[in-house]
Image (cartoon, rainbow, N blue to C red; front, side, top):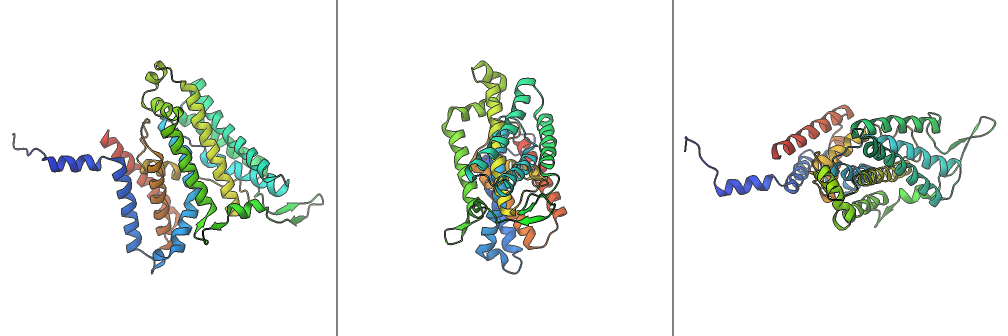
Length: 337
């Protein structure tokens, strides 16, 4: 025995229970909600408007996290999501407000731009064996520069410059009002509904389609997947292309919420998106994770941000806390592995 007490079956079951990513994600959300109940800002946390606004504010991050989940499952990372969001927000505002394009044409053009940025990163990674960190870092810088070039370094708003140098204010296109509207008795916003549709779409890809199984196979063991006939290069391009697609959708929603396209939009959003995915239990090593756990991570970050906001905690403290949360989540994953 050597003076040691072997763990009983109850302790063993409890240890296995806490090793479950689902249990950890639920516990993280529960702890944050309990913090809200304690630090409720004089009852503000108990009002439905607080929860509705939280869902609205976190929806853009949730959409980004959908794409990030697909990439991380393939054992990659995408640092360009914030910059691609900023680029598509500028393009959406430019096409719809300044150029007066039809809404469907504007949306398709933005989707194409976002997916192209993501697919370009995937092609660099798959074709030239560039590390995902480096390839997406380059795309992050490129997309941000392109956003500033297209916008002239200024926000694209309803103030349109005329040939004589003066500004004329135009009406906000209807698509902005549609995306920013509230439904179900003003209890839910359209952008939150869009996020839920994205989550459902990712579930169908990962759980029901062959390409979803390919994502897990490539992330689990790329060489074994290649020997099994999985088109590894195409899988990576598709994963990053879908991430770019979700970035474009998030950029459109961001522009609709702000009623303008800001070339600086999305700064440091990649940090929050990664935090959401990691808190949800998706392994940074790849090959493991589900989109429903990413939804739990989205709720956790959303409630945490809202609780800090209603209690007047500064942005600097929020960023530091987010960084600490990522480290803690990764340490839990490392201990498990």
